[in-house]
Length: 136
Image 1 (cartoon, rainbow, N blue to C red):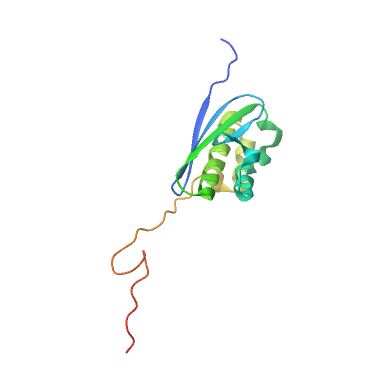
Image 2: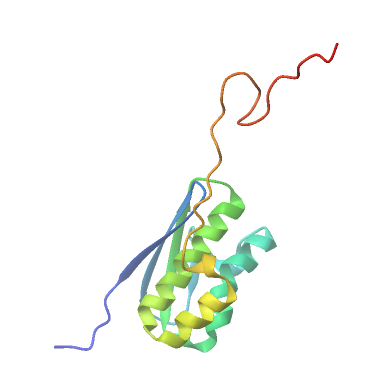
């Protein structure tokens, strides 16, 4: 059997954003929504997405990662992409050292954040806030 790497498809979620990372053997190219990751704006989102790549360093050079994100806002998509990239790297390289390094930096890279926004209720403008009562 030939020594051919398979294609990995990994997902990450944050709030209402969902990101899907497709990983293949390659030269280390990373794209986000069909743009090179270095061209992503705002800079905060770019830095967030590149975090797992910086932690792993040169070990991620042998793979191409293509990330597609939808839903949510800019930062939600960036954090979903960050999770997808971190999980993809972990599943591609399969060493406990990388898993410990990613988890040690920020656990949210591998395990999701379960918090969601609370739905609005009647009797007020939001989920918790009520209409003000008169004091006199």
